[in-house]
Image (cartoon, rainbow, N blue to C red; front, top):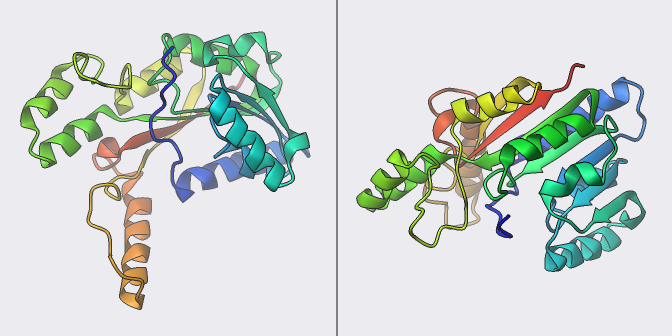
Amino acid sequence: MRAETSAGQGSAAVRAVLHDEVRAARARGTEEPVVVDVGGGSGVWAVPIAAAGCWVTVVEPNPNALATLERRASEDGVSDRITVVADDSDALADHVEPGTADVVLVHSVLEVVDDPRAVLDAAARITTPGGAVSVLTANRYAAVLHRALAGRIAEAHRLLVDPDGVLSHDSETLLRRFDTEGLTRLLGETGLDVELVRGDHVVSEIVPTAADSSGASLGWEKELAEFEAAASSTPPLRDIASRLHAVARRHR
């Protein structure tokens, strides 16, 4: 697999969904939910989730990212709640027992692994019945749109017609991008039931930002957040977001 990952911090909306999943796990009787963060990088997701009272396993091969993760975990006092597995996402099933994870994060991973179906199959196997797999991945149509708006029409056209949604002969760091239909189909093939597909950053990465810190700027940011919340679940706006966020559940 390639070591690079796409932008994956996600929005407050993604974090809210994960918070709901942790709360649902507690409602099912697990006071301290088990979360597996596949390709967890520097702990952007893992550290806050551990701070919320969960046990987190991070599967990540990059030593520099793991060093940052360990520093963040130490600063937040959650080192004892995070287990690090220094290995590729492809090896997930070798390190986590089947049916033991309440929530599995597969964020900014499917774009860069050699076999995304194998990673999702492993994620489904380690998820406990009733648990959820959260997937955050790069959106092919956003890449097309962003290049077209930048005047890079030839690149936009190549991205549009390429089966994987990448510029395979350029310096792309991703192996593929997904659209809503393809991501939903791939998740369904693992036996998981897709419950949610939303857009993450529909326009916030392409609209001009307010330059000052005045009340007007704060008002603009509030308007943008409210728009993003509404647009994220509204096709076709959802389908041009920078990333797609899906939640799929294991029911058996």
